[in-house]
Amino acid sequence: MADEGLVSHKRDPIKASVGNAAAQRRRQHAVTVGKERREALMRTKRLCRVGVSGDFDEASIDDSDMMIEEDQAILEALTSAAVEELKLDVAYQGKGATEKRVNALRELRRFLSRSEFPPVEAALQAGAIPLLIQCLSFGSPDEQLLEAAWCLTNIAAGKPEETKALLPALPLLVAHLGEKSSLHVVEQCAWALGNVAGESEELRNVLLLQGALPALARMLLPNKRSTVRTAAWALSNLIKGPDPRAATELIKIDGIPDRIVRHLKKGDDELATEVAWVVVYLTALSNVATTILAKSDLVQVLVEILDMSTSLQLLIPVTCTLILWVWWIYVTRKILIICTC
Image (cartoon, rainbow, N blue to C red):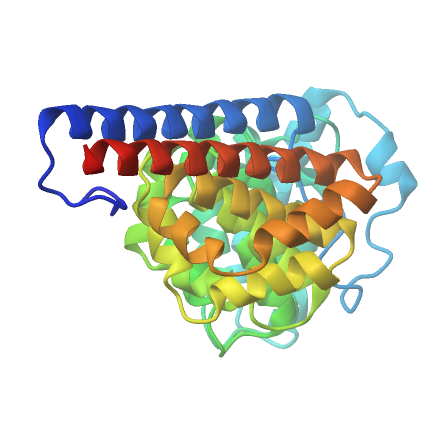
């Protein structure tokens, strides 16, 4: 069903054409914003080199891991070997089985975190996805869950066909966003889902059907900065359309409008930037969202940010939202004038 507008569904042809044209322009602008955002800021998909928490393997990736560019063929061979080792350790049920699995996962994750072109294809061809899904099963130790989700995050940051390979893992990644998982695991799974959502409308629709949106929205409610930042980034990928229904569904979740304004007011520049991109897509795609947000002091907060912030990455989405807001007010008034004629 299309997004609810400000005007009745029963409109004459002239009024309908104005409303439809306005909605189409807004959606085209949202797509344009998305393309510019991906090309200019490289924000849509993110390789995870440093984990969401320092609790596990704090020194696992040093500068040499990130900076040295091995020959790609050697790196791919090492990655395939790491997957084979993981197969053996997943099958092993003897003493120290958990430690062996975690070490094998960590080794694979290190390879998937290296170079500008991680050896994702080699990992997939060696059969990594079924093993990672098995390691992501509920009841597993947090360290194992975190490493498995981290591997999936970096696979999802790959090429389109590599990201699609995560389809069998999506239900578990979404399920781990619930209360039964630790916050570090939740955050890493959200990162993986954000990469998947950033790939295509097809994958966004799959995630929406699997309940990713309300699960990610709940992550905006706590006050943990990194968790909210990751959730906001993932949500901005998930609702960016062109179908407006996800944006409308998000804004109708209890507490979300207030949290959006709160994070923009009190968050640091990095957090506010991620939340501001959520607002861009809400206002670009959904009249319902724009109407609900209009009842808050969001515009005042955005104007204050525009006046005081020196962060270019924050000012870009804030400026986009204010432009969309002015356009929404103009179109709304024009429709109301036509309706009174």
